[in-house]
Length: 609
Image 1 (cartoon, one colour):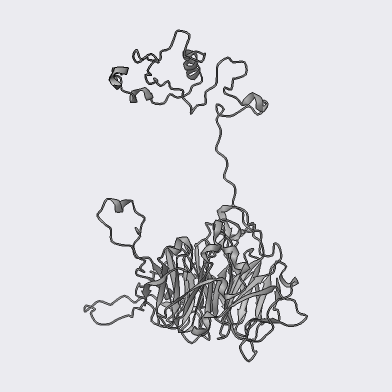
Image 2: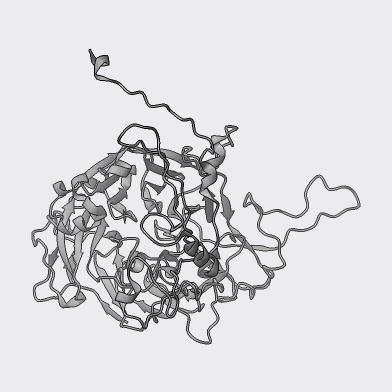
């Protein structure tokens, strides 16, 4: 692993000093190619160049767009050197990016706390202080052929993009996440609420900035909400707050309609988006998790004793449990949780765990003080962590999974998601350390510390999965580059075997094409035509036709020699029977046996007069 921190003034204010960089994101590739493919879709083949968006605390230039050079640190930065107009590179220092444009619409709302590209690559959502949310979009006229995402590399000024400013409906927004269909996104706010915005206009299909409006609001959290993550499969919405909880929401299903047409609708039948009751994650049992009951749904700790116990009976004491997450005293405003790209695991930062390391079963009632940790949950199983990544000196603040799956090393049993044929790599940021984990080990596979003077805030992977970009409050960005094979071998799903071909349907490849092509293919040494098993020749009675002399309708009949055009009808039927071809339903039954004869009416010349 190589760590490089280019000396670039990424964001600066009127005084020329660095502004803290709070968020970063990379434009994803098309869903049908490269790293964004599901593990079963084939090999990973992703071009290295991409577009990067960064958000800062600067009121002058809250958001910048950068072009990521294909050669990494071998390319020099090309950025405006004027303070307040963008970023500048120190003379003689190489940099892996090139400045493209500055987006200043966010200046009215202050800091840009979260910047995220939509999965389809057509939108960039920016959320920040004051509840401001701005959605930048590729213009409708630049989306031809479904390649609108490529237009981002041509953006050079703010006016090249369409934008929509959402009205302030909450307090400061700390995190943002897109739904996999790119028609809605969720934000986490400091007013204890989670909001879902949806594009309900025709622009959601035809293009444009869209008409975004708030369609759902949830206030299950009792303190700041500092992280939000949509499930890549669209089933869950996970949120994390400083009230020491993680909540997993499901979409509320509409009431079943009695109409017959509703039975054939989708599960939600076009109903408005609503968040249902959430699953709360706050405690874990100190004893063996396999023997202890799951935490109470209301997340309240049951106390032993109390009123209402009959005389002579003792109330059973609730099992000892420990709190899983730190409180609001953490020195950060971010708890950026994330799902793995396949949706199999949910990784949550800012965790706590008593002695036991990475094994959730090792802790006991006599365990020591809680240590900082990161908790990993299996899909649908949120009662207790499937994997605990403990041992960090400071609390974790952000998680970002690698978009590329990797093969499982030989002889290694996965520590999480054991049923998957691949392993997922993900990065965990603490306030001062970058750790890289995978789903096969409880210990990090790579780590670096001390690259920045201030707290780390966010990170993202490039589309090829070989470079991790980390942002910091000191205004600088670090690139952690991995050589080929350092993280492992990218996973390639096996190609499904072709269906077996029967002997009757197989062709003799030893014959020339001229012998195999034509109106009829004859079998070697045989005299009759070969009819494919799925093809049946059915004789349809032709309609009567009028003769030219008008004497009456005449039916076409077969002669003893066979139908017109030569050949023998009986011979063809025998060939079908000999070849074993199945007979389909006779179509002659669809034709009426008796037809009404229509006597032609002759009109003479006298009738015209």
